[in-house]
Image 1 (tube, rainbow, N blue to C red):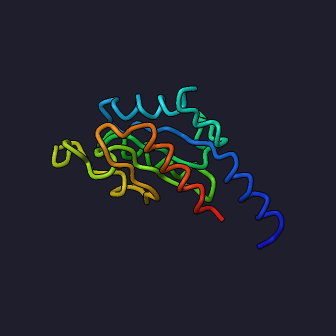
Image 2: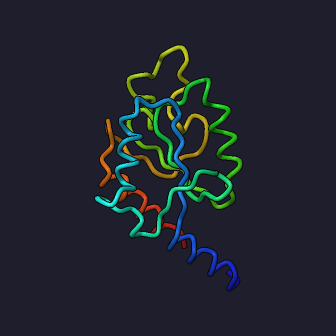
Image 3: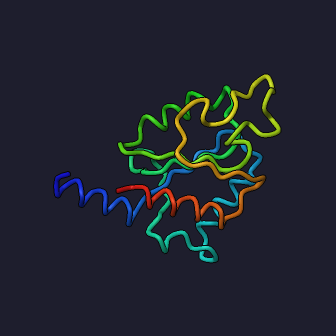
Length: 142
C-alpha cells in the first residue's frame, strides 16, 4: 500500500462523512439518527459529520423499508458516492422490511437493493447503537 493510500485511509477513519437517506421510514429512526448528531450524544467527537451531498459522503445511513418510489433514488445516491463507500441499515424496516414487508409497494430491506456493511436492528434504533455500529465500521477500515 502506498503512502498516499495510507494517508487517505487514515483521514477516512478520523473524519468520515455520512449521508442520511430516508427510504420510506415512519421517522422514528430518522429522529434517532438526528439525535445521535446532537450535542447530547455527540457523534462529531469521532470526527463524523453529516453532509447533504452523496459526492462527499463516505457512509450512507439508510432508514426505512425501500419502496418502489425510492428504489431508483437510493441506487443513484449509492452510485454517486466515491469509493470506498459503506452502507449502514438502521432500524428493523431497513434491515428486513419490518412490518411493511409484503406490502405491494415495498421492495424489502436495503440489502435487496444495495450491499449493506452494518445492520442496526430495532424499532427505533437507539442513538447509542447507531454510534457503536459506526465506530465498529470505522475500525474495519485499514
